[in-house]
Length: 75
Image 1 (cartoon, rainbow, N blue to C red):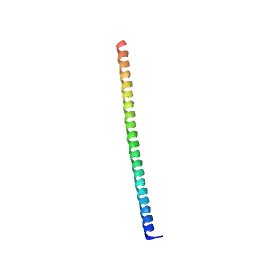
Image 2: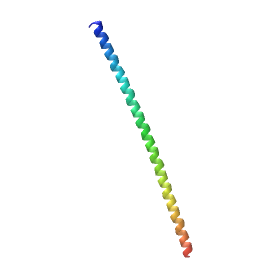
Image 3: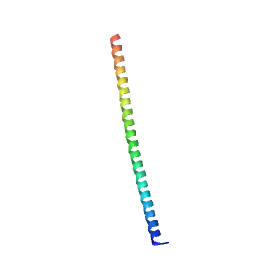
Image 4: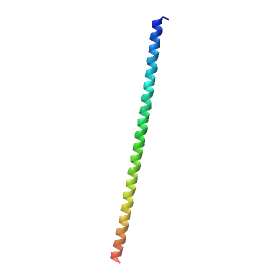
């Protein structure tokens, strides 16, 4: 193998290694972004569920007080 062929082969291998490193970094970045997005979505879902529970508790409490008031008025 001539010196030029060795140089070409070496350059080709370096490019391939660089491409693999770039691809690996891209995949890691995508994975991290997806993970962050998932965590944000989970947090939003928890907050929404908490708000729904609070509204339901408020409705239940309000209905209870109204019923008590109506019973007192009818007594």
